[in-house]
Structure formats: structure tokens, C-alpha cells
Image (cartoon, rainbow over all chains, first blue to last red; front, side, top):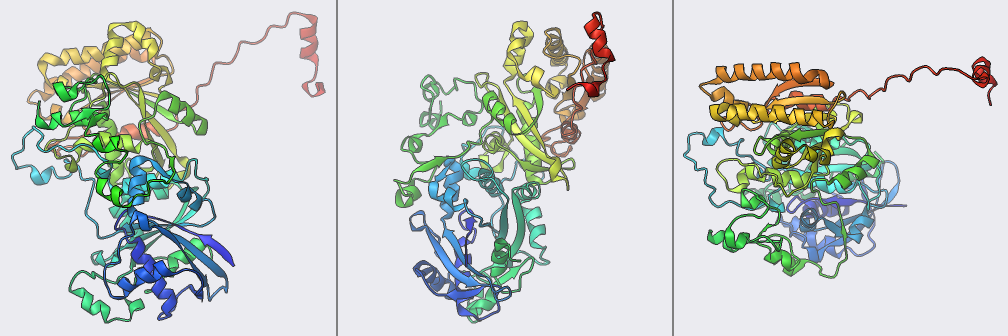
Amino acid sequence: MSMQYHSILGLPRSGKTTFLAALWHLITAGEVETKFVLDKLVGDHGHLNAIVEAWRRCEEVPRTSMAAEMKVAIQVHAPVSGKKFVLGFPDLSGESFKEQFAVRACTADYIEGFAGTGGILLFVNANRPSDGMTLADIGPAIADAEVSDEPEGEKEWTADAVPEQVRLVDLLQFLLRPPFIRRQRRLAVVVSAWDAVLEPKPSPEQWLAREMPFLHQFLTNNPESFAYCIYGVSAQGGDVTGEQRIALVRQTPSQRIQCVGPGADPHDLTAPLLWLTGDD
Amino acid sequence: MTDETSQKTCRKADCQVAVTGSCAEGHTPLASCPNYGDHSAERSGIYDGELEEAAGEAPSEVERVSLPSGDALTPHEVDHFLRWRAATFVTVIGDSESGKTTLICALYDRFLKGTFAGLGFAGSRTLVALERRSHHARVDCGRAVPETARTSQLDNLRYFHFAVAPDGHPGKRVDLLLSDRSGEVYRSARNNSTVVATLPELPQGDRIVLLLDGRRVTDPIERNGAIQSLRQTLRVFLDNEALGPTSIVQVVTTKIDLIAASPEKQEIADALVTFADRLSADFAPRVKSLSFHEIAARDPTTAFAPAHGLDTLIEEWATPRPRYTPPPPPPCALYSEFDRLLARTPMEALP
């Protein structure tokens, strides 16, 4: 049995913990066919059981706070190849990544997490506000409005003002220089809240190229550092904060999960993980 | 002095901005100074507006490992960079407010939106610096009119880094290092040629970009001054051997949107043609190439697309420059018997 420790990256509200909760339900419930199935229920699964409760009730999964960060491990096997794996993940708070970009520092534990041969799950949320707009972008829209040259309520620069795609590129760039070990890593981009992408839905790769072109260019132009694959995932299956919740809660839980991307079955969240293990 | 200013301070002990409202380093607007702001959170070791979260959640005893700053590179950091990989140096020269930083920010903004000039973004070691400089052109900055933070005279030479690769050819990556230095320094070099020797970015530059301020060109009173400043700048660099027969010089007229909108645009165009002809006649023989370009990095009227004209420039910068080949040495004269013996000896017979 090989141990694969994968890292998870993503800013706050990018869907990291919801993904883990849905994954835990998926491989423990056995409601749909998946590329990985639970091999043994051993170890401490308190954190996974806690977050999956909210997911099963179609509630927003509580965000991981920096104080509640922990590592989880799941023993699985791949029915097709018969191989067994222990999949390890850190459930890190999005605030940790936000802080890493802002203060330009990280923990030794975080560096250690990238020392092995595991890959990276990078989360972005499809249902996010646009950022990084320039005044030139909105120029035509405000062309007729009366504006003053005098700045009113001018704001100082803070790291919070940096567009998400720039922060993600910088978080990935950190991995290319010491103290991190430089090598090619498998990276699965998980576009969460895929249900929120308007029809006709593009492919996940087309979505990334359209909505986060800076990140997409960076991944495309660094093949020696990142072999990447992009998935669209709806771990909740829809908007659990609105009227849709009633319909969702009546479905078989695993069947409200959606996953699109290379080699993915419609409800199988394990496709990105299988790709990360290199057993695809 | 506004109430806002009085609540803010500068990290530098000698700056009296809290009292006078003026930045000691000359940054305008004030918010563009990296040392200016409300540092109360910083003094307590907590970043930005994360006081609440940090107080409740952050583990205080965890040891932190420093990561690269993302700031503009110092010449020392550039030396370190060059031990890793080769780079193309683009030396951007121009008077104050001629558009040096705006040019760099416009390039960055284009890559944020997608590939540009057939090139894709492959990385940057200076993302934080690029973000800081771009802030005053963003909607989030709270301004109604875009602004670019000026490079202060007290800021020394710095470089912005862009790694780019032709679409579909990531292996043909090119690393560009664009210089950033205050326009006042170049003005000093014009006034006193001894300053030229202190500008390492000139002999180091694979491309020398001389900016002609389009705003000054549109003003009949300023026009001749702007043109002659550029001419004198090129001359002082050549006469003091900072530039020479291997230099690739690009004269770039900025803010051509203002020229295009001017009622005197034909007169201006004629003046620029005359200027280019004279400059070519006088200086083209002394450099490897002298070319002329026009850009509108950020036209507020949107008549010109953002970064208009920068596509041909960056395409040229990203084209590998042929290596300098020194002329062959003169043939060696053989005088002694030993020389002649060596000349008769078959090379394969030598150990």
C-alpha cells in the first residue's frame, strides 16, 4: 500500500472543505460507482465525520478556521487496478493561504507537505465576484458620468486588493524556489460550484482560460513544473442557501454531486484524485 | 493637511508626512508610497485588516519560514537571478511622468486578461510590485480617474520581471527584466555627464527604450523641450560610451491618444517626422539599430485599445538577440624557426 500525501490550495470560500465532506460521504456510502472505494475504516475520522454532517443536511459546510486546521487520511483501493493507497490531505484554512501571500511566510509543516511525491488540488470557485477590474475596463460604462479628478475615498493598497488569480499564481510560484523542492508536480484544478456556471457550459479548461487567464497561461507555460488537469465540481449539487435546497435534500446524497473533466463519471469526485495518483 | 493624513504615518523616521502632508520621497499620490499608511496593525505584527481573525484564530507560536517578497528586484537580486537563467534587459528611460511605469503596468494588465502579442505569461518574481504599481488604475482603489504611482528619485534602480513564452511553445520562454528608475536621475545625467557612469542599466540593456512624452509633445510650449531632451539624452549616453555600436535603441512616443485628439495633430506629426529624420541621420550610424514606435498604454477615452503599440515592442523584446560576435583576430605572423616548425607540424601529431 502506498501512502500519497496530496496538498490542497485555495483561498477562502473556494470549496476545499465542502469537497472533502462530499468525498468522505461518496467513498463511505457506496451509493454510486467510484474510481476509489474505501479500503479500511481505520484511524481518526472525527473531522471528516463532523464536516460531512452539514453536507448531508444540505447546509453550508463550516469553513475551516486557522485554529481548526488538520490532516486527514483515507485508506482506499482502486477496483480497476486493485492498487491500495492511503490518501492524505491537509484541511487548511483559506485564511492560511491569504496570509501566506500577504506576509510572505509559511509554516515548516506546509513546506514538508510538498516534500513527497503527492500532487496538488487547487480550488477556485466558479461563483465568485469579479476582481481586478481596471478603471479603463469600466470606462465606456461611466463615460457619460460626471467624474472628478479629485480622489474620493481613495484606498491604500493591501494584499486583499490583489486579484485571486494573481494570488494563486504566486502561491504556485513559491513552490518553484527554495525552501520547496523543485520537481514536476501533478496539479488538479478543481473549479467548485460548477452548477453556477451558466449554460451552455464550457469545458473546465475553457472556463479557466476565460475566467482566470493569468493562471491558465501560467500553468500552460510551466509544463516542467506542473502537469495539470482541470475539473468542474459541484460538491453540493446546487445552491444550498436558496429554494433549491429542498429538492437537493430529497436526492440520494451521492447523486447530487457533479463532476466533469477528463475521465470523470457524472457523480464521481475521485476522478481528480485518481489522476493525482498517476494511476489513470 | 486632511484628517486622513493626520491618522497615517510613515515607516521612515525622517518623513514628516503626518505633519506636512508631503511625502519625503516625493510619492504622489501619497497612498503609492510603500512606507505610508496606518501601521498600527503592522506594529503589532498583524497584517492588514485581519486583526479580528488573527486574534481569534492564528496560532501565535508557530515558526514561520520566509518566502520571496515579490518586490521589484535590486541589481544584487538580478545578479542572483542571472545565475539561474539568462534574461533580456529592457532599459526604460524617460523624463518624469513620461509614462515609464504606466508602460510596465499596461503590459502586466494585458497579461492578466490573456495572451498578448502571441505571448503567454509564464511567471514573474515581482508580482507584488506590479500589483502595487497597478493599484491606482483599478476600480478598487476608489479613484474615478486612473493614476500611476510615480517612481521616486530616492528609489534606486529596480527591475520588473516578466517571463513570457510564445503561444504553444513553453520551451521557448524568455525572461524580460524591465528597468525602473526615476526620471530625475536621467535628467541629472543630461545635466552632468559624470552621472552616466553610475547608470549600469545602460551598458547592460539589450534594448534601450527612450520615451518621448506625448503629453508634452501636444503642448506647443513644451514640444521642443521634450524633443531636445530626448536628443540630448541619447547624445550624452553615446558620447560617454554607455551606448555604442551594439546598442539597440527604440524611441517610443507615449500617450499618442493625446496627439491623435489634438487639433494640431498634423503639425505634431510633421514635427515628429522631422525629429526622427534628424535623430536617425545624426545617431543611427553610432548604434546597431535605431527605430521609432508609438504607444497609447492607457487611453481613458478607449479610442485606442489598452496597451496600443506595446504588442510590437514586446514581440521584439522577446525575440532573441543575436549574440555579439567579435571580429576575427588578425593572422598571426610567424617570425622564429620555432613558429615555422609549429606551422609545418600536422595538428593531429600534437599531444
